[in-house]
Length: 261
Image (cartoon, rainbow, N blue to C red; front, side, top):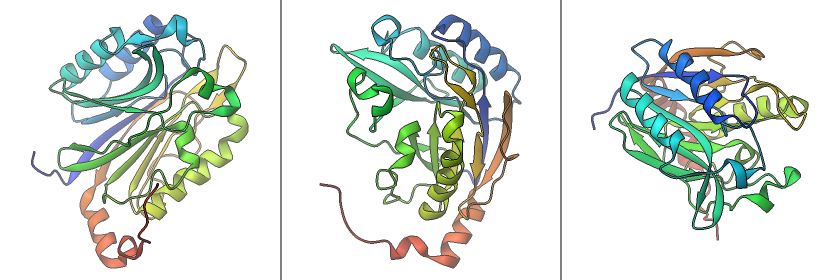
């Protein structure tokens, strides 16, 4: 696949309908249809069909379930990649699984590594063990999920990826950490960094105020800061800016050499 210097990205921040996959797929179908034809990558929140629910026994889908089929349909219709996480069951286990679906309906997956113990996610969902690096239009993309944001070693840019993505249901009470850590991950990894959160109140009474954002490799915000309502925003990422900044500053060349055991 040839390298494309500009990547047109859309982030969609929405008020999710609690544990209602049909309603949420309908909601996002309308929001995706309203995006411009130039969009090439669409990023949705964590558990975008249900909200952040521990009711996996009733909500989980098979890998080739309705939501993945819907994602394939949307990717094909829009001729754009689409990513977000879904509750999946596989071999008797439950996963908070991110799908990255290409326009040709090819799929890559990432299972959330850091399950959120404060909400007992670790007691419901099996943690993933492998990170995913997606190659799309010549861009190397590392998609992660929510609580992963608090663990910088897991996001460490040893592959020289160009874009780091976090899909999330990150509550309002800790949104200051969300803002700070997204910016930090962009700076320390010299990468574009996207964070897509939800808004509204979930069925467990937790309130979310969004703050979805895109940062460049110097930590400069490229979207309107601290937006707390539903929105869909399209931004063009410039790989030339990224490459020029890395070549000038060379910070990644000075990273420590160590590996996780």
